[in-house]
Picture 1 (cartoon, one colour):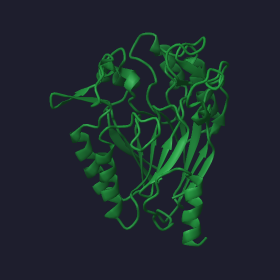
Picture 2: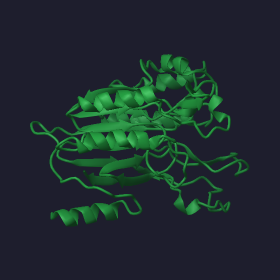
Picture 3: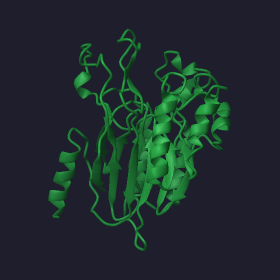
Amino acid sequence: MKRRDFVKGISVAAAGSVFTRSFAFTPFLTGKNKTLTIGWITDVHHGYCADAGSRLEAFIARANQRKPDFILQGGDFCHPTTEARSFMNIWEKFSGPKYHVLGNHDMDKGNKKQIMELWGMEKPYYSFDQGEFHFVVMDCNHILTDGKYIDYANANFYIENPRRDLVNPEQIEWLKEDLLKMRMPTIIISHQSFDDIWTGYTVPNKLDVRKVIDDANSGSKHPKVIACFCGHHHLDNHMVINGVQYFHINSSSYYYVGEGFGSDGAKAMYADPLYCFVTLDPAGRISIEGRSSHFVSPTPAEKGYAHAARLSASISDRRIRV
């Protein structure tokens, strides 16, 4: 494929995205070039969605059949309560490696230490290697108050404060160091997004994070960071910014449309649980095997929700060259 045709093709695939720089299509690594598959679920919201347990059961059952290299939950999973222990027992039914991302609502009824203890999560942000890829898990759950970065705890982020959902400066410096020494293609995972999604409510200092990503990529023969994944926004979306793929993985459960909507309050529920399997190919491809469902009636469109046409009760199948 000619380079101009490739760039054109990927721009069409990411309609409406920001595409300001492209990298030549080259394999990341030589050698075995073994693909890596991840089972991915996010925003199940145990303690808020009555059927969260059955949705997680469906994902774990499929993961045990599919046998990905590891599974990951992208945040807003559960609260550190006694009621969540049976929910965690479902999660533990997958025998392979399992990873966690902190979401804002995980600290609705406790603090980071408590939820991390429940999950067996050693650090709020961390990195790890699997196969021929490097993964960075970020923690965007900080409030800036009186010049200090404060952890989310006991729903303190509900206070109206434009300086929330932040990545603290220590973490940004850590990210710089982590990427500086890394030679493997890297995936960055966060709960809140670093892109420019139409709903807003993205990380306020996302440009600081993106500068670290861009600097790492521009200083390397091949791009180090190839993609960023998030949940939080309950959307099915993909865009490209400075040659980096940005993916939104949809909630397993619902889209929040506001108080007074239908019989289930503010939730426009999905009829079926959503999750996906992401396959990374060192030859330069990211594939997403998603799931499609539909909204439980009354749907956002039936209720006249202003942005109903932009919503989707699905996670799209995608095949992206990077």
